[in-house]
Image (cartoon, rainbow, N blue to C red; front, side):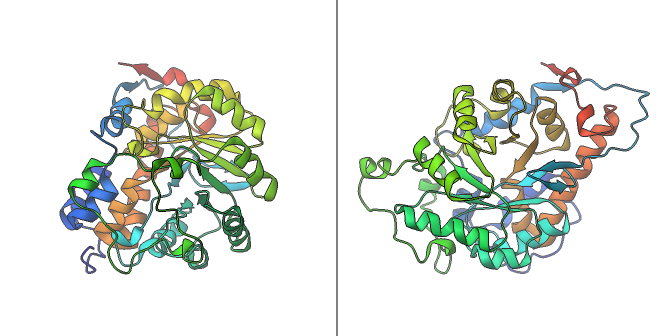
Length: 358
């Protein structure tokens, strides 16, 4: 659903905002509606972005931090920087290479990749081109046996963590998609789910009966040796329950504003979750990150790392795998510059005191 000739970085693409603009011009309107849209009036999606703009940075000077070391470790694996690729469905809507191109670009930039269950390429094919820092995002399937099969496939393919999405038992009300009459085009489907039973065609009540519970979380954790990260935690009480269930980490996320509209922005909720966790497990976050300064602000509020979704598929749509790599490089370079200019030589040097709320 995009021009296959777009495989070069445009001269004017110097920021993530440039990639968003260019992607809006190049993607088919239906694909754009799916990849860029949010729930209902898209208020939460807008708030995610505005929350970063309300925070101001207060630099420290003369600290000898002309260069920045952004390395960190998660679940025993070293990462060059705290910027991971969030799970986004159906990358082939953006480019014919789909998740294969995205994974190759992430590997080249040594970035962590979280592959969606709803990938348009199989997790095995993606693993063949991905780097070692690869995690699989899970949606519970109608049959536990199918969910367990996905887990076993991920283990066999060398994925290093499982990310269980807990905040989207059903899709949100996505007016942008409905106005565009979005439907998956022929040839694009959830490749990982081809062998499993489809979701029932019944009504809302039947779908909600399949919604995951804490019992399901504990079951999955008990069935695998991989660390299980819960994505979609917003309330501090749920963060505590995540620790009690045995989760290895959590992601503070409102699904990019794609599920329930008027949920608060993730950046505003991050501090309360971090305070509740008290360092017992890593706390990651996503939602609205478009600049390296945004990454710095999230880290200052206690995030162990961040995830970026829409900008990745925008880069893919504009310039294929090169575009994804360029988006990651832009964001990583901006983050390193922001660290240096605020006097932070390492991630541990990023203090909350560097922030002023406008």
